[in-house]
Each structure stands twice: as C-alpha cells, then as structure tokens.
Length: 347
Ligand code: NAD
Image (cartoon, rainbow, N blue to C red; front, top):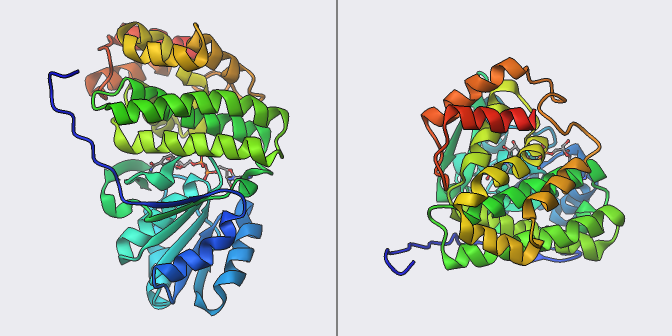
C-alpha cells in the first residue's frame, strides 16, 4: 500500500433494488428505447416473467423459457436466430445465473442492451464475464459488452427459493467477497465492498434460513450478494474459484454446492498468508471466520463433501496437478501435495 499504483475501473450500470422492483422492468426497457423485447426466463421465474410480459404488452417480441446451465453455445445460437428473426432490440433475462448467462450471450451477439433480473445470489448480472460450453469444454471470456446495463433486484422473486439453494447460492456469493479480500488487484473500494458483503451475508443468511419468506431478510441477503457480485467483477479470483472451475468442469458438478463445500478449506489454507484479509474477516465474522463458514457449509442438507458428489478420491491428485500447473493469482503458492491435502479434506 502506498508503494504502487492501484487501478480501479467500474462498469456503468443502473441498478434498481427493492420490493416491487420487478414491476418496473417494462419501464426500464422503454427507457432503453426498446420496441422488440426478447424475454428469457427459467421455469422457476415463470410467474414473474408472465407479469413482465404483461407489462411489456406489444413490445414483447419473443420469449424463451429453457436456459441451460453453463450457457451451451448451441442454445445461444438458436436463441440468437429467433431473436434476429423477431428483430429484437432489447433482452430481458429473469432467473438464476443460467438465465442471466444466456441473456448476456445473446445480447452481446446481437448488440442489444439488456435488463437482468436475478433470482439467485450468483452475481453474474453485475460482471462482464461469460462462461460458455461447447462439446463439453467450458471457455470464459471477459468483455464490458457482456455486462447488463440495467439490473433489477426484487427480493420478492427470492421468497420461494428452497433453503438448500438459498444456502449454497449465498455461499457462492460469500466466496466472491472472500476471494476479493486477498485478490492481487484489491483496492480500498473492493475491500470496503467485500467486507460489507461478507458481514451482510453472514448476518442475513441465518435470518433467511430461519424465516425464508421474510422479505426484509431476503432483501438484506440479496443486497449483500449484489456487493459480492461487484467484488467478482472488480477483482481476480484465486485458488477457491480455480478449484471450483476445475472440479466443476472435470466432473460436471453443481456450481453453488461446490463453492459451499470448498470455501472453509481454502480459507484455512490461505488466511495465514493473507493477514489483512483475515483482519477484515474477523471484524465482521468474529475471531474464527473459518469456523463460521465451515458451520454454514455443514448445515447444508445436500451433499457436503466431494465424496458425496461422487468424485473418486484417486482423481484428486490429478486435479491438484492441473491447478498447480497454471495457478490463478493466490496469496500463497501451493505445492501439488498441499492442494491434494486440501482436496482430501473436502473429500
Ligand atoms: P441456476 O441459474 O442454474 O439456477 C439453479 C436452479 O435454481 C435452477 O433450477 C433454477 O431454475 C432454480 N432457481 C433459480 N432461482 C430460483 C428462485 N428464486 N426460486 C426457486 N428456484 C430458483 O444457478 P445459479 O447458481 O444461479 O447460476 C449458476 C450459473 O451461473 C453457472 O452456469 C455459473 O457458471 C454461472 N455464473 C456466472 C457468473 C459470471 O460472472 N459469469 C457468476 C456466477 C455464476
């Protein structure tokens, strides 16, 4: 600090947040000059999408309701063809990261502005990043054109989220903020966001799990996840995200569950080498942040270990070798032995 030049650049985005915000989506599309809207929504968001469709009236040109996880390019190509045939000039996406990803992919290809309405805590709606899959291979690209210009957070869309998804998706958001704290390109701005995000998630998640339909608690969790998403957009992620990407890609494992089971293990390994991150975490999580995160992960009623997810123990060393061969930026370098040990712990 004070010895090198920090560069901080933010994305331009208009964010609406609060109960009933979803009712403003049609106005937001109109504000963008939209006359021919493509509406993308997952079945879980069908009721909200119906209301948005009604609000759009004759400005709704096309609707697609089968987004697929990890944005397969074949699905994107079909949706782009439909959008072009319908002369679409604006994309509205409602749902989890899968719907938001498809909205980003289509919008970037047809050059239309987008309104993202997230219903999970994954954070994709505020990032300029898109992961796409083709022939089983996942590639990730970063381009400011991918980031939605308008984001609408309405906690009412999250009230029916099942407790399991609520927990794992919030842990996914938590991981963005934790890794931002030890990122090589962290700034005072991202430190502030990340600290607020961690504190907000650790406070609001238990409240939401105790009262899943409480809009106040849902709103606090959603706004903390928003800040965590901005952390993901503004900093380079480290070992935790690399493990999630390599394990998820190799064994086709569920994104949010992986984040949930890995985070405490990575924190235990990294925090001794990241004292400033540890100090900030302790400020909002108490003296033992690793134990707090481990407790939240262990409370999950679904799979809580790599073994539960069906990963063969014998494959862990191979994963460790791939991680160590091309590491993401991390507060400390790890050996193949150390990464294998970490994975064995998560196994
Ligand atoms: P998802 O979109 O696949 O949703 C998971 C499941 O939950 C789906 O069945 C969905 O229909 C359901 N669901 C979503 N919201 C719900 C709600 N409010 N109530 C009830 N059910 C609901 O999963 P996700 O975790 O939101 O997103 C994961 C995807 O997003 C992955 O493909 C991941 O790679 C991507 N992602 C990308 C970025 C980025 O910056 N590019 C960031 C985070 C995640």
